[in-house]
Length: 300
Length: 285
Image (tube, rainbow over all chains, first blue to last red):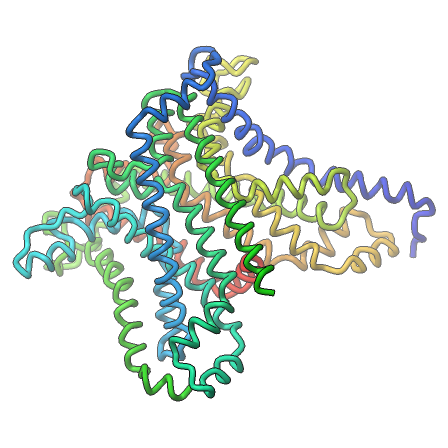
């Protein structure tokens, strides 16, 4: 057995060196892939950079152009309605599905797995699958409508139906994941509470709103925040399913950022969109977390 | 609980669950049937015969074999890098004295909410300007840098704040006494990290690895931006291009969709149980 190093300071500095040695590669990588690009995005958003010529400072021009561009406002509206629509329907549906699988169903585990499976598929795969399912000629939904005497339904090429279709497809893929989180929270609701309430004559609906829902609240808040912030970044479904159309009806913020950067080669304007999106995400996540923290404090 | 069961009988729950499961099973049956429909027959109906040759035709009609190789290379290497960086940094942040540890942790937590899409454009600019690579001069001008290369495709996936953060939490939960005891026995810091603590966090390593693999494998926007030549396309991008160019060949498209989804699906189901338990215990708090 070797004795402990005699000088504690030398020992400390040895461990400190080991720590710096271990943490440095990750910090360098984070710098290169997140922090520097983030700062660069802010910087470039005040320039007219086009990928080839030397960028020159143009102040708030990019932001002014964006704010006076109707496509930007449309994309902002589309992004919010996608994220909001998906979260509102999704949270209610995920709670419903979790309650369903919280019963002792025969074959419940298998059905739960089936609902969870699309989570393993990429958005590209899910989008392609649903392009087939929603096809006006050969998709089952349009064919059912036709069987009842209607015309073919153009889910993805109609202005009214395109975005709702993408919302439903995204819900189809994502519900399983969020359902599992809520199901885990449901399993930890104390059974005694529910039984006592039932003995006191509280019905299933009252028990849900007065006991279950408050008990799973933090899981629900977590799901809602994660899902909403994820929804603000939607791109792949629109790109693959509708190409952003018809007439920009499914263009999102990330989509117009992509267009500006790689079709118009307007890196400055694309960076301005990224900065705005970043600002929105930061403000939203900070304020939502603050609200849920205050709610928890109040309830204690 | 008896009373609730009489009001909402189990049969109703089962009925609802079956309808729900059907919403998932029917599209899956559609993919399988479509992928086996002979070319020329309309998909979405029961095919006259099952054409297994579609699977061969699909991979022969485009470079899906090459795309698969690209996807595997990009995903495996960036997953390995992310595991290594998450373990080293996570361990240092949890168990070793570090100057500025509080600041690093604050930055990490802040970076957790930064969506990857936001840094795509500047990261592209940086990749294009890497000096001495891809025909660039020392100022990073003149060539294409890392654009259209496999290392370029890996760039955003080699490290993640979430991976470091998760590993740090798991190392933190292990007792300090383990390391102290080994130190008394004369073990080096490297040995304590590699041989004592890391084997105990293997479930967490698996979780971080699966996150990393999935995000690299399923990524679409970054390959779309970074790829110029067909040779560098990943599966997700190759599939989309194939769809855009041959949107009527649903049978071949679905054959590829099914083929590339099955391995990931198998992996997913295989690790599902422990994936769920570990992720949720970390995430829901």
